[in-house]
Length: 312
Image (cartoon, rainbow, N blue to C red; front, side):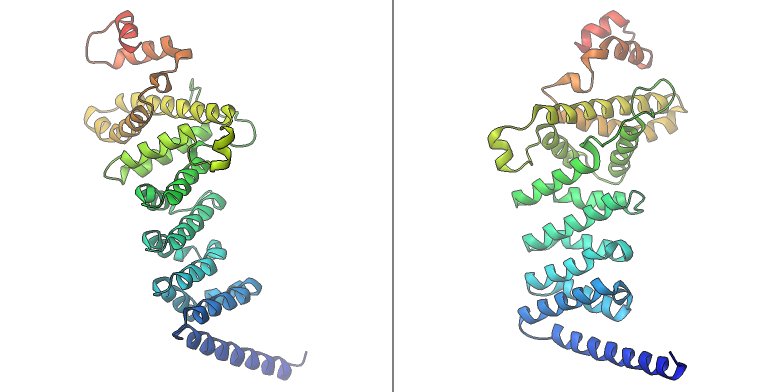
């Protein structure tokens, strides 16, 4: 193509883009929320064909401005647009997370699902801990369906058995799979930045019972295998937490106490969540080994026999 024609085409594209942006902004200023929502959906189709459009600061600013629109349908349309392409524009992730506090139930749901999808699709998401804190904060939501979404999200993050075999283990002599150890560290890292572990207790309780499953599944009974799988992972997480506590305790006392606290907090959350099932944090299949391992670290002068009787 001749250079003159190429320049002419580029000029035409810029004019069309400028005209489209002016029309888009004008549509977003319309009184009717139906028109504003349609404008966002129209841009979503354009972005689907050319994701770079969302990279335009003017487009980003216009779309993000609709996050606080007076109409729920418009706020949801804006989130849906950004959510489809947030992987290529992660910088807007925290702004999406802020909408978890929205007054509209559908907007809160959409925000949680978008952030969840980002975390699941990107194993190295740098804001994973912040995302977890934002999501778990909705555990106390007035809408029960949102509570279910939150608990299901953490099931996918931490308590669902991954596909494939687990051959790597956490440290020498440990029986905790490396994958479980990494998930456990994610829980601990989240607790480091939270004022309380009560929300985590709620999530663990819900996952142990899988009570966030749809009513249709509950009506016929939850698969015992699924329940056993979650329980097994919780056992391994407790074991991992105990191992980490003992490892840190071997360090300098002052430094050890500071670093041990979030692990103790996480273990305590599992203990509260499984209050009626003490074998979750003290597996019956490995009780004697648990006693032998723990006894040297107790300040009281228990022998192994008295400690075993105390535990059981």
